[in-house]
Image 1 (spheres, rainbow, N blue to C red):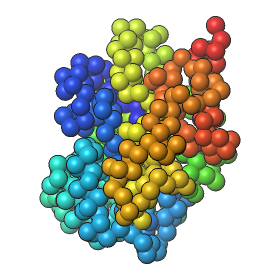
Image 2 (cartoon, one colour; image 1 turned 90 degrees about the vertical axis):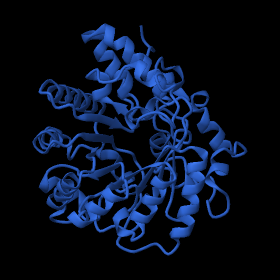
Image 3 (spheres, helix red, strand yellow; image 1 turned 45 degrees about the vertical axis):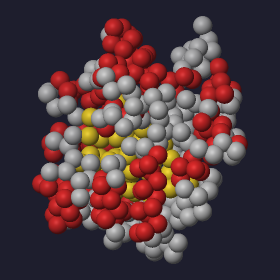
Length: 395
């Protein structure tokens, strides 16, 4: 997760994170990516059931409820364990989390145990009444996924009217006083929609957006050939930076992040080095704090059936099940060779990744993408768009 607004628009200083000793339990949410202890943010896919049919769904969600979902009691036991181990955030996802009736109870319990509870949703089920409930239980944030304006979004989501219903969900959250933001997965079919997304942010005064780079997992694995080229990715990141700065110059301090491609960090730094060397030095310090990809370390995932994964895209690899062992035990069990290596993945990446000057601030980028394309977990991430010269392989 790369905070474009934080880094490029100068809204966070290294001293901001140092003020809290970089401890997860003390850091405000906007500084969590700079935590030194890397207590895991946990994504819990509480259900596989969904009311939409998204073509890029990493969970392969469908309309049917999985028979082996964790029960409410099992979910609360999981939350007890996460709270005890110091996990700062529980992100409830799916499928569509609002299709699970006890979702408000689970979120409320997480808040009661001292965690920040957030949800990732398609937004179409957030009625005014539902938004009021989400506000009352103390939900910290609602992230609503859209993939463009009406025609493009509804094509991706597989249901006509999904776009307008999602925006109604945004408005209902705003009316209820809940912080709400957008989530957008970039690919070659919707990259031209990025300006329209910024227009929506400005018009609706939505305070946050995350632009996700495509990860080849679940149904998204069929879109490998529909990812952006390296040159297209560079142009998209430049556009995101330019539009973010334009909003901030207008006095609209929207939080803009890119997610799932840690090459974005060095790319932002290299651009700032040309434009503002003094700020570039501070940004490099922040990126060193961030440490890049944290799958299996600073982020983890629990599936609807209790299986524990390195992140929500590693569904094909389980480290254990919370029905048999607590998450905290599974997460810290270094007898599993992959878990051990993910905790220190920089030692094991190969090829240009191993020689890259930015390895300490990228963390080797996304191992799932490398595996999907090469069948080698430790091969270079094919979505890294930095040139050999930029990563120090050519002088």
